[in-house]
Image (cartoon, rainbow, N blue to C red):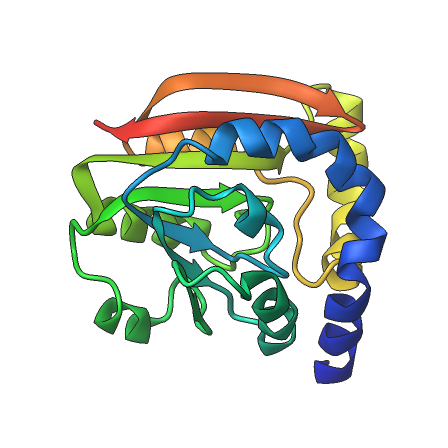
Length: 202
């Protein structure tokens, strides 16, 4: 499995290049004005790093050592970005992040991969300041029944190929059910169904 994860990290950026080009403006708009202390969840190869405000402090959490190695090159010359090799639900991460210490938590194309997204969202609630915000850009379960069925059928194979990614998570519903309220939200489609927005506690 380690060999596959190494190869996945190596080819992730070129594989996603055209797709990321389509999301460029959305990422930039979503991330460039965030200030304070930011927790970047599952930062992968560091795609978000070029968008963060250089005056913000970024804790970039990534469980894959191979992805993190790629992210290090994008973090060069950015002393405001600290790389942390943890899964978001690892208990050890609580030694790095104090309760109510984070101004913004950023999740971009990551909540589809976390084994227990409900626990992760509870962690977000614990770490965020009362005035903090959750910022997301995620693909979610299709709306039409036929597309939902296709995603459910394909998902087991896709999950293995895409290193844990799930096509059929209703992340929008999970976030709201956990007690986050959208400040703004948007659904859009670029082949997959996407959901983006900013959320506050309560």
